[in-house]
Length: 280
Image 1 (tube, rainbow, N blue to C red):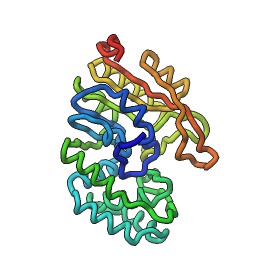
Image 2 (cartoon, one colour; image 1 turned 90 degrees about the horizontal axis):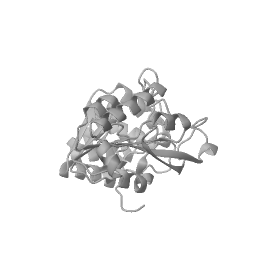
Image 3 (cartoon, rainbow, N blue to C red; image 1 turned 30 degrees about the vertical axis):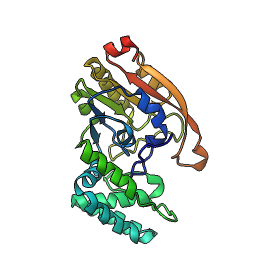
Image 4 (tube, rainbow, N blue to C red; image 1 turned 45 degrees about the vertical axis):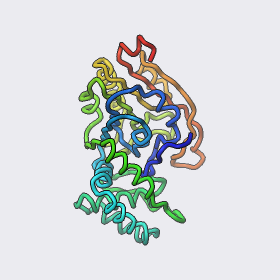
């Protein structure tokens, strides 16, 4: 895998390493929609006339919006936080400031700082909605200047729509000409492999069911949907009738180092009937 733009965020499940598998399986279209924006690795690498990044996490979408709209001035604002913030006391003071901050731009800058200085790039909140990822203790956190400018260039040349929304609403609103890639928090594939604390409200088995049902409805309207998940019997059963491709992926985030092992994942394609008949 070479030549793909890298995301400016560290993110659990970031798909940058899997782009060689994902991109060839995305059909042509007028707009790519990602209802689980994450680090936006697929959006940054895919070639579409337009893009729509959506997530239920307002902090994530707020950061993308601040980069898109703030440009170089926002990049310099974040750079200042990286210049003197790599110690535990500063990190926890800024985490507390982030949880209290109401100004969208200042909150976005702190969110990127926390992402790059916190443990393993996790994004985790307590039940009260407070960001609670511990300090990462990195020797020299990377300031993603090149990656920020890459996102900014795409936003200015092609256009990136941004929205805070539930995935089901996005899938139900997609129209022919749209292509949807879904990278949800994965269904558990064993102890320590599920990630449900995506936000204060979590992401649970009922949400997995809602996602597959919405993907089927979108495909029935003529919108192709590509979905990533763990390769488990429940996932396969729920996606029966769709095209399923399985492959091993080395785990990069786990609660224990010994849990970083290959785990099978799937790419599931829900295709409009016309595409399925043509073998696309």
